[in-house]
Image (cartoon, rainbow, N blue to C red; front, side):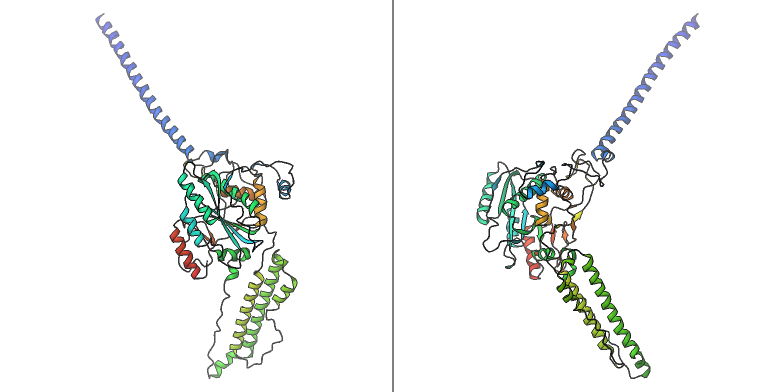
Length: 478
């Protein structure tokens, strides 16, 4: 009986011990699970923060791309351009108030039309930058025979009376400031851009081109004018023709060496020269027939230009013509053909051309929430942006400018101005024109590598801008 009770007692203790061990094991397992659960939740949160899951829900950017207003807007745009009532009212109008208007800025008795109007998107506090621009590329009399205007578009800093007082003095002194009553922040740049469009349509429609520029850009006015004259061939059409040196051979007394300069070699030289001229002629004809702009050149100018190429097939040199004469003929033909190409490609764009030019990009939306350019799927659901031009500097012809302004009234607002204009251009069926000489980054500077640069970003230091621009002006590049 004693052993029986001991056995029962030991079993009870063992059972209690087992229960304790089981509870501890369960607690340990629970803690381990909780640890992994926390890790998983943290990982998911981190991946969500960087937009890893958002990409799974993006829509492919393709030919089926739509963006509100979802429909063809060309009929509405044409109606608005002709002061008629459209069938559908605009969905996006920027109805902000102009605090400083300067509506007489583009009224000039000396000129009915301006070549370029420069629109500088400037932060309200950047007084020194605006002053540096007025003293450099924004100077309106840079070329006495090229009428231009420069305006600065600003927002406001609420409750900062000191800055506003300085802006009022600046506007009264220079009469080139346009101020609108929106808060001047980065995410309001679309408002700043479109309010400048609105002002230009109403008060400055008499320009052939409009250039929109940030206030930290270097701009070569000279290269802007060269570019808008012939964008398709800039800067190649400006480059000097290659100088070909005649490779003279020494004619020795030896009869063996004299045999090298017989009539056969001379005839081959003439044949190769004429064959090269014929090739250039065919290329010029091909260029003129395929390029719709060049094809519009007058026929008499075309004939006159082509006749400058030397194709004298009646030239029959005697056997004792020296090789130096042949080389001189080759050099003359090369120079003449290069000069001809420059004549053909140096033309004025037609009035109805729709040019939207700058540095063209196509990239993906930033889905990580820490990004300055973070975009939700609700704002933009596609995996790629439409092609767009970096907003630091771009040029619009008048026709493209008007089409884009009225098309913007049927384009849902977007917070990034370059993307918004890319959306507008797509709706308006305007093809973007890419040029490498619009540097959206700060191009490394030397005295000689800005010869063809149109713009360069990163000149927020007014003194640096003045130094670089004046130096390039001295070199004839600004």
